Length: 462
Image (cartoon, rainbow, N blue to C red; front, side, top):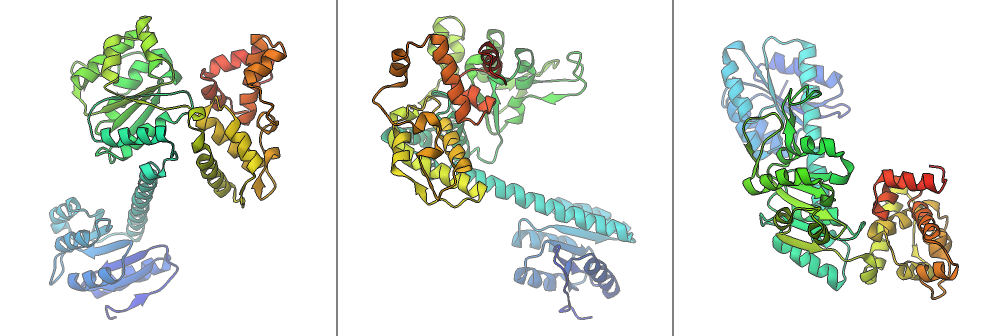
């Protein structure tokens, strides 16, 4: 058998076998071909490198001891050629130390001769699965990073351009950032943009909604604990400050952190050290904190509900996001973006939006901001039947012709009570979110418990 021989088959994966023992080479080639792999062979290192440069392989299986080039050297050369090269070594008992050395250089695993058939097949499958997962992780990381590049964030208005300029300026700083804005204005999106455009982009981005975690669990969630620290602590657990080490910890709804925990958070921010519950020593962390709130944090400080020293520590750099009603010129671009997004997800062909429908969207006050607009377009794409989105595809509140009255003025003219007005607004928001109570609660600026209580009060079936 010459080294130019191919073993064509259904390509579950392309495998290069490098082995100077021709019988072993033939055995491996036939075994893997029967399993559905596409196989090529080479009988020494230089030939293998030549083949690899011509055809990128999913897996290389190589003997360790060969003439002209040792397997350890081949591993190094392959990794230089392709940093993602996946390599499986075959070695005799006497050369295990060299095999371990090659693994340190980047090989996936090694097998000792003689090996069983099922052993080689299992290792081949595991090696290819690891390669697949690495490529998928890299693809997803690139996709996420691309999504949060500044040119991919929608907003051409002057106010948003100032926001982007500030974000670009502070990305690589180590200073903590406070993002303020109404619910639905895109605070987490900006936090992710800071992360993925900074030197910390390859580190973790760890988000936490402080309002969604019970007060009794928030401390252990942030700082972690050791086994035995309390009754249910059956094993050690890393806190989010440790998980975000080298990256960014995003604390949304920071105003919801209870006062007794604010002092501990302040200490971590000042000392750059975290001590898990039950631990005797603190651990150094390199975690940048970006926090967000949709309320007036200064007034909470004045009321004594939020520590002033913690506020100053969090508010080193402040980014204020404008509500959508103050940047209505961004609505057409946002509408186009969301139409493309949901049309792609639903495989629906759309030619655009009718002018009267766009005018209705432009005239709306958008109390739920960009999030509410996104849900509105999603609903229109899902329920619409024409090639263009029209007024009839929008919710009744948006589709009604404008009469010059604001919603409040209309309510006043009908002599609504505050209770009537609140009920009507809650029902409109639920309609716009398709009944999604979690999203509705976010738009309304309350937690789900409060929303459920209101629905029960108004005798609305949930």
